[in-house]
Length: 88
Image 1 (spheres, rainbow, N blue to C red):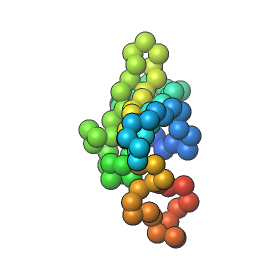
Image 2: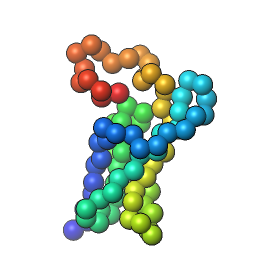
Image 3: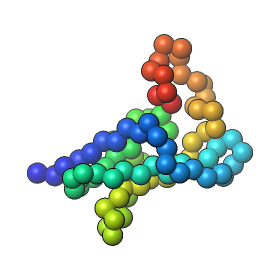
């Protein structure tokens, strides 16, 4: 059976400047098993599990990664006051 991992990150590993209102953020996933696909859903892609959320695997290290452009300060409009803290 194929193993599919859906990853939710609390820690951002690496980010770099691009435009003044956004940054390129790279997420890394070091799995304990060998998933056939890893997805990175988030506000930036409508929480979708499709080609926009698939991470790439480095065959030499087995580490999965994906770089996305995120707005500095979070999404606009900001989430509602009663939304999950840190979910953006």
